[in-house]
Amino acid sequence: MSDKPRVLSLAQPTADSLHIGNYLGALRQWPGLQDQYEAFYGVADLHALTVEVEPAVLRKRSLASAAQLIAAGVDPERSAVFLQSHVPEHTQLMWVLTCLTGFGHASRMTQFKDKTSKHGVDAANVGLFNYPILMAADILLYNADRVPVGEDQRQHLELTRDLAHRFNTRYSPTFTLPEPHIVKSVGKIKDLQDPTVKMSKSSSSPNGVVDLLDDPKLNAKKFRSAVTDSGRDITFDEVNKPGVANLLTLLAAFTGRPVETLVEEFGGKGYGDLKGAVADAAGAEITPFRERTLELLGEKTELEAILAAGAEKARAVASRTVAKVYRKVGLVPRG
Ligand code: TRP
Image (tube, rainbow, N blue to C red):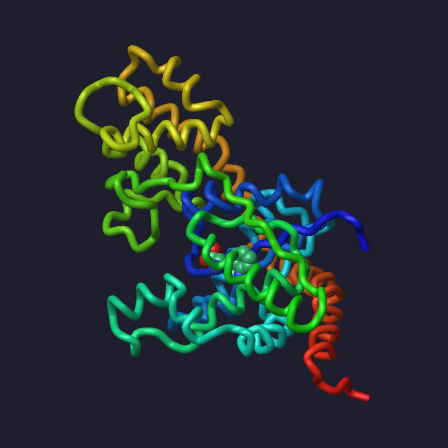
């Protein structure tokens, strides 16, 4: 085993393709952490069951998500790449953590609260209620030090730290308190057609969302027809010029250059130039990503073998944690 600190994150397989918002906000940070950390990267297929989904669709999306992690640069030789459901310890630890979570606390978690306050308690299942506790189990199983996630996951990380602390004080020091790893500057990619709202697959206009696995030509067109603001100047002003600000954020993310430099460079140029630059920079990164993903999905047996090996690696750690936890809470070890 390595003595490096650990990093862990899971991606929910809720769509056939990641969009650039998910990608830039979270997944893109994952590969870069593999040098300094021992990495565990997975697909949260159990979390995906909290909303009703066709079995065939879930299967397809789970494999597509795994392929996209690898295409993004997660290296299965160095990191454990796995499906959550292949590591039964996730649900085993979840039960113990469920029994440490106050009903009130779980009820106040925003995801559950938002859904039930909008659509009533019957709109959610108990799985959705338990969702953050399963996520805490995902993280604590591996004693992860760092968890790269999007800004929207901060509350879940807080619950995780809370549960770790509660367990550690009630029983004995066991769990590492994880730190979120949130990239601020690209935390919020906005919809291309409505730059006042976050890019999301539930967006009203499909042209506002760029899916990584879509045809590169279609995507270039979406960037080029992004909604901009009145006026002509290219300045970074999220309140008065959210469209231009979003394009600058995207260009900065895809080129690795600071927004200020870009603003200077685009002084005197028009919105069309900026959109074209975003389309080119995004295309240069997304096109090879897409090809690699499709290639992996074309070699299904190989992909499944990678995931089986990843699950083995993960279980080697996870099973020790569960054994320790079961013993500490007073469950009798099987003789
Ligand atoms: N809830 C996370 C999301 O929607 C996905 C997730 C599940 C996760 N388990 C995790 C993220 C553990 C980090 C660590 O993005």
